[in-house]
Image (tube, rainbow, N blue to C red; front, side, top):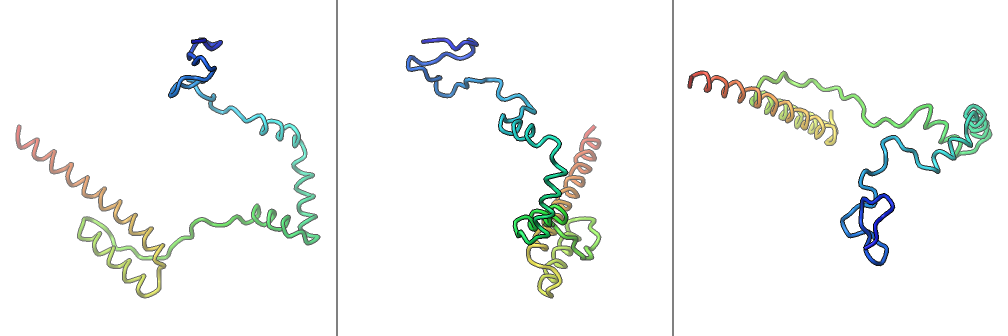
Length: 148
């Protein structure tokens, strides 16, 4: 079997690397840019203002693609919107159940969408789990101290 120039991985007789063995065991260095990206950056160096001005002019002249591009940069699509909902105070599993009931009621009244309620219920469940973990930890500490 032939050795690679860096002598890190043996090649098979047909010139291919052994299955399951990387030809570059260290992988791509962090922060390394693609050659195409570097070439594009070099071409556009110092042209950002002129390109932006041209895109705005094209948008103002009715080019719909340029308009969309400009509007997406000025006012990007929002991923989430704030939800106005009074969540009951949660102090344990019982209050988490009350909060879930309030979410269901808000969906049935049309105050929240089902997807908003699903997101909020995930938050309620996460908070409930954190409370339960805290309570369990306190019980374990108490039992360990009583055992001493």
